[in-house]
Length: 417
Image (cartoon, rainbow, N blue to C red; front, side, top):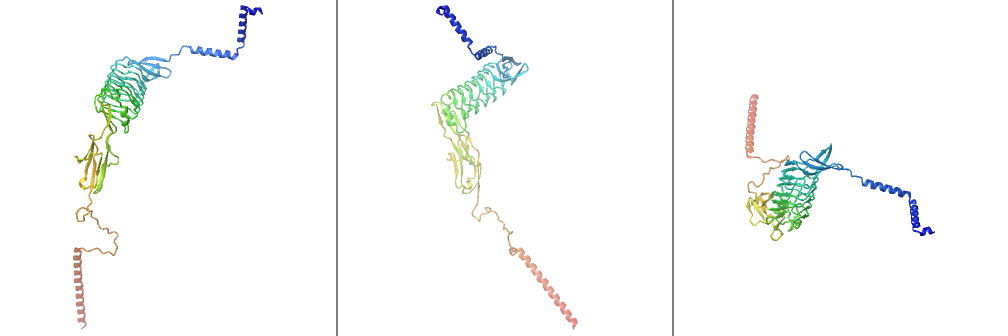
């Protein structure tokens, strides 16, 4: 027992205990340790290369992915200013679909035009910044465009993708746009997206729920069009921040154009004494007061005309003609806020109640189809003369016959004597 009390003894005892414990470890745990070691070995293996680089004959540089067979444009070293981006590239006999244009890829390359294929789904930040592009069509395949991607160009014609949901900040700033139509897919227009253009009209659909600060800064924006029923909502979205920097006062926010109500006929044939009513549906307008930062509802200015002459006092959206007379016939139309609406023709059919007037009633021929056989038609004057002549001839003939018979009878009697 003394051996276990010494230091050496204690160490030997611990060694023996450890050996016994190791011998008691279950075999399945040993196998589990081997599997874990193999997993770790696989994890630290060098990664198989999946990304390659390529440059085509026009000077466009790409990175391509051998796993999903896609390619992204990373830069441009060519001299062509009228550029067509290919939909795919062939590298070592394998086709790679070009799906994205990376950030800064074509920045400051003096491009005057670019054709973007419908394989592209994304365009990075500053991708085409500072060029000389004059027109641009973004295909519907594109779902996102980064900040300032087309800033500082000369774009005057723009067609946007209908698959995008946001127009990012400064993306089309410093161009030459005079009008823009925002697609129905867009939910937000970010800060300064169209700043420093020459915008006169913009069409914003009801899908847009956010417009950032200075979105149309330094443009003489006259009219903003939106969907019917959306003006009252959009005016609140176009708040003092969104409208900041517009260079003219009294920007108009309006819905569809003024028009006649659906029950108005453009051609009307009516009788004397009847009535007609015409209604105008005026354009809903709000006018922005830059000094007070408020949208004010506009009261429409209406004037009715007949045969190109002003109808005095007829300035309501409704025109009613009561107890129509012959002189009410003519061409009517309304001018609403300076816009002339279509002509309305009114024809008055005159029906007279005076039987002595000539030409006021149609000539009605007597219907003889239902006359009975015993009905005697009236005899005209010529027919009476003819009948009298025939009767006279018949009388003469009858008298001649009687005279001849009497002579013959007298001659017979003489012979018998």
